[in-house]
Image (spheres, rainbow, N blue to C red):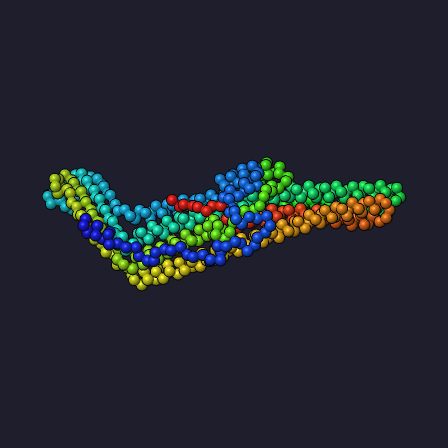
Length: 463
């Protein structure tokens, strides 16, 4: 036992120790893109979808988190990674092999008497114990790699949560926004229909021409043509929402189907800064943990350059009708040291492979950092542009409404032709349609900001 203790105490971990990689110093500051109505001094809350203050949305998100099929896959992957970690930890303990048997018959090969050997019962048993002394840290590095792998898979599970919550919220907001757009399109159809009815009565009265009727009919048909695509887009959003929640298309949530007004966020949008972004995004944590695991695997490969030392002990039992007493037992105790010498050509090749994989993982981490910053800046820029476009289209709609009202007044006064009214009406319908589309873009761009900022799963544990 003194030999065992000595070998264990002198053991050391092979390969390089892991140190977290540095991130660009410039990433720690405020974002370059700073749209209006955003607050860089406040970080995004973990449950950011509650900023909409919509109980129906809260329920949809919770159901999606519990039933989404992609999350079920990543959760199963996490369970598997944890099981692999438990298997690696088993290397710290001895392995045993227990055997037992009983037999009845004649052993003619060992019988020295005349005639046939007598029948007899025989019993046997054995116990073998072996323990790998982690002299060069192979087992410890293997456990370290498995632990980091489990952390990386846990971060991948969190990344899937970010996507599921963002896309669930997007599908719901889109469905509500398209419902609003359908109402706007229907009001435009009603407006165009009133114009057709008015000019038709004037034609019968002889104060308008059939050409004016046809022009009004064109505007009505164009307004009606906008309805089917909007309905199809709303259906697509509802079906997408059902799939995200683990439902079939026939099981669209009633709360989403009944929504006719998109939820809005009261106050400014909290976005934080680059430091909070890098701490929050799970994909960065996944890349960093993968780098740690690959670094540990260098140690596993380096340890294979050295012999493996195994200690063992065994005991055996054999008894039959002619072999009794103390002769039935045999045993051997350690150290029973077994040295296994590696093929150094193969081992060194594996070390080179492990170092190359670690270099690739480091590059992947650096790329993930840059991608996170890029996606955040792009989403903020797109959100700011969508907000500005919506504001300009609100002004355009208001002016189009004023122009249409003036055109109607002047037409009744006989100072302009009905063609001018049709032009003003068409401009109003177009302005309303463009504003409705801009509202959808703003809602989607806002969710893209939330998604790029990471969702809020800053912490995760694989054990």
